[in-house]
Amino acid sequence: MEQQGKRRVLSGMRPTGRLHLGNYMGALYNWVRLQDEYDCYFFIADWHALTTDYANPGDVHGKSLNVAYDFLATGLDPAKTVIFKQSDVPQHAALHLLFSMITPVPWLERVPTYKDQQEQLREKDLATYGFLGYPLLQSADILLYKPKYVPVGQDQVAHIELTREVARRFNQLYRSATTPEVAAAKSDKELMKAEISENVLEEVVFPEPDALLTPSPKLPGLDGRKMSKSYGNTIGLTEAPDSIRKKLKTMVTDPARVRRTDPGNPDVCPVGDLHKLFSTPETLAKVYDGCRTAGIGCIECKGWAADSLNAHLGPIRDRSADLETRPGLVEDILQDGARRAESVAAASMREAMVAVGLRRA
Ligand code: SF4
Image (cartoon, rainbow, N blue to C red):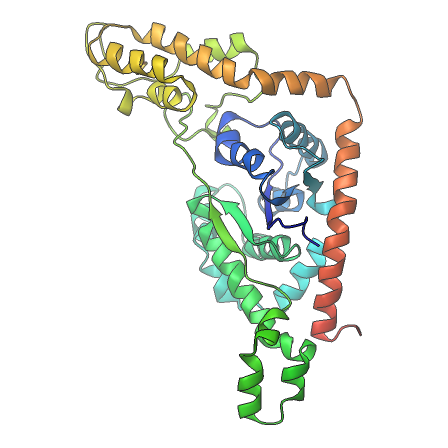
């Protein structure tokens, strides 16, 4: 049951360990803002970690705890939001299995990330079913909770489209068993009439969710490329202020500013991108003016960027320090979240099993 009057939203994140600024701006920053308006479910997708790292999974549990830590430090509130770990709710695996029975293999082969990631991760053998089927596991993750929206960036829209196709196929194959009007239809004409009745549409097992396109601002890493652990160019979400200041000193700038006297352009400078996200309008105005007229040097400008970033991350660091003093709290929150998630997931799974004919209502 959705929280009274609120539409449901669900999203997940892989357990990559402590999060960096790119993870924060790409997802968590928006998730925190969705909590008041929606009935939110946010989870750590630990089974997904195995789809690419099955040969060397490492301490997936420890990494999951670290991500949960950062979920809470950024402001996800367990009083408003269900926060849980995917593998604590076994229905994710069970529904994935049911979906694997009905999903044509070419649907998975044409998901753009299937070929892209095989290209990018050549050192790994990704010719496994788990890797091919991970978008289907995502479909199960989503549809179990029947959310109205899934907040995603543009690069994930193809996965939501696959989820919608899987829901449609499941509903087409199995809804007749669960819908009295269709089951009672004695002719094609009656069947067509029953299928377009509002009653039938309401009784589909899995409503199709919509993508909630979230803004993903440009957040470059220290070398100007996309911020990513694999590039070694990250700034940690709870990194110490001095360390952030030191790292920013090495950040690349507008290549046109070779000498201090050369004017530059914040619109083509990664440090300028940080200012746009984290600095006040007054500081931003000083950056544009000083950079374009060569009135400021890059060292000074990077110092202002460090000030802005540290001010923004201060409350996150404080919450993180507070969590450190309360051992066991994060595990307790995950367990409670799993219990709440499982009550919803178990009901959906029962419904799906009845629809397929694996059990009786
Ligand atoms: S002054 Fe600032 S915005 Fe301009 S090039 Fe230097 S670091 Fe970048």
